[in-house]
Length: 241
Image (cartoon, rainbow, N blue to C red; front, side, top):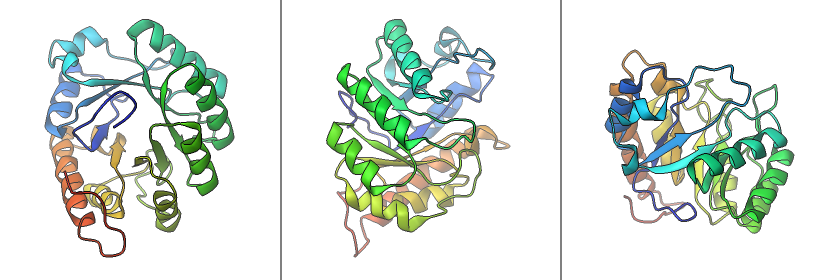
């Protein structure tokens, strides 16, 4: 669950890096995702696909739509992006990213932005560095899920600090999505086996020699990791699915 939405797939794919609408459609289909992520580039420095072009290859109305502020470098950028997406598309669920020049989540600005968006009635899934106190604060505020950075975005380094990730997973009761730097199906399976509710991947699929096959591989990695998590003796999770 994320706010008013119920997701069936535990794999979420970012699509900001694609230049082919047909390839986006094939990747989403192969992955089994039921989430479609859209955003705005306030600086207008990136090539973006038209939603109408993607809809020619896969019906977008079959997806749960989530907005993202993945290009936001400040709290102000993030808030402006969310408000624009709400006006344009009526989106109510948002991946909240505030990543300054170092491209790492800025926890303090993220908390501030989350509070404003929650006050405006949005369902918020903030992206943060692993920090128990910040995670608990965001849960207390009413965020519907948390997104925890495994490694720097697009680094492919995997779970660089499993202990910190596990501590956050154990500290909150809302769903925790692990993302950032998941560069292979093996790393995705590891994140799911740890107990993540879901994973989000982008570069590992978009930059693969065959993105469609990699998307399918990620789908199976999520299932394998989820099944393995159900067998862990130290921290049992809900029935796999």
